[in-house]
Length: 139
Image 1 (cartoon, rainbow, N blue to C red):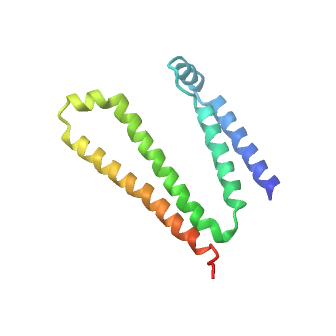
Image 2: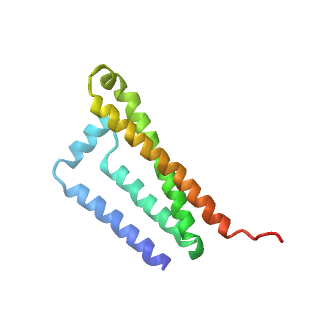
Image 3: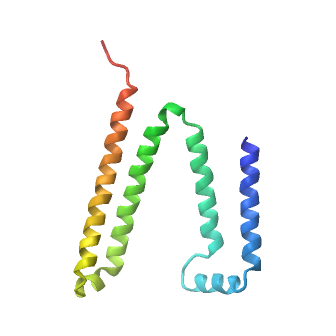
C-alpha cells in the first residue's frame, strides 16, 4: 500500500512538472513571480502534494476509534489558521479599510472573526469531551 501511494505521488509530481514545461508563458510567469518576491506554481504545488501525503499518513496511522477526535483537533487548527489569515489581511489592508467608509466590509470581517473563534473553541471543546470518553474511570 505504501509503494502504491508513493508511486502515485511521483506520478502526480511528474505530471505537474511536465504540464508546467509545456504551458505557454509558464516560464515568464515564474520569472515574474520570482522578481516580485512571490512563489511559482511548482513550489506551491509541491508543498500542497507534500501536505497531502503527510496528512494521509498521519490519519492512516491513528486507530479508527480516534479518527473523530483527530478531525476535531484538525478543525480547531484550521480555524486558528483562518484567524491568522484575517489578522494578516487586516495588517496589510488596515489603513485602506480604516480610511474608507466600507462599513459592510468591517461588519463582515467582524462576523467572520466571531465565527472563526467559535470554530476554534468548539473544536477544542468537542476534542476534550471525546478524549474524556476514552479515559479510565478510577473506582
